[in-house]
Image (cartoon, one colour):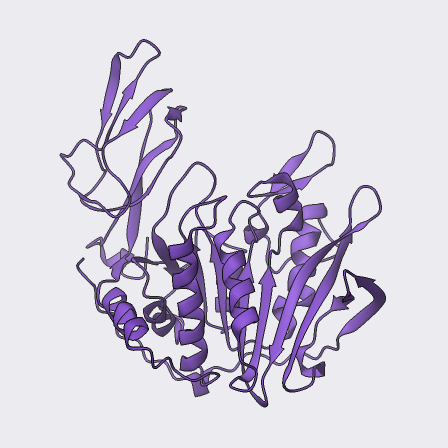
Length: 377
């Protein structure tokens, strides 16, 4: 793959998130052997400790509260703070396994600083097997929690309050040094190992290198206001959205890449020793050398409904005159052929052949020569 080189000056010592005073608040409840909190302050926890907690969330329609799992790993010395978030969309599951494995395998005697893992932030979405958060009000409506940050815990509909509660009681009050929000593509679509990143934020480019992702979308976040990544970036805390493949599955290869990235990230933050395994190092260097940085993606969409047969898959390089799919009607007659809107790499495709008018057939990423797209379109 071609690679666009982007030079950004970034020094960890220059990262200076605003200090926010907090204190862990316990409700007095215990669920499955773990204490319940209503607010997390990692400074309250002793050095050399691994703590599993439940964060009490707003109460649902039956008066019972949701509870979000939180894991706090604190090393033998103070240091930087790394947040690993996952499952903010309830059908995006690979990242949950990454958080589980990293926090299970981490050696506290080697850790300097604090790692906070949230293995499944959208409890409601997981119950519903849905990307969104389902409000039960009236006939029901879905909220995208990753467009509602920082929100307010006492304002808006139930989903918006839920998002505000996450921000006000975990994400926004612990002065994190760096943040990775793990996602996957949504139901009936596919992704490679892929990152959204605002490269104008110091240290974010380095974070993308550490992922060894197949593709990085250079992105200012204007289409994702209220996302975890964008909200942290705006506060001067470097963050990325790391998309690990496909929804509603645990893909061992994608999970392993997220796992390996997490330990590289901690090492780069001077929180953990670097890997000395030659095979792990060689695999990463091969990935890193081949990262493709693109600044624009455009989707080819269906004009009418029908059945689509695809001729291109994720990471294929396609040209504008190349047929990437064909639509058929119920009798098997060809309705139309589909072409990319520009030359580039296939970033995403659908997995369901049934398509409605306006549905995406393929999404292709490339590097636009438009000066206004230098930091992402």
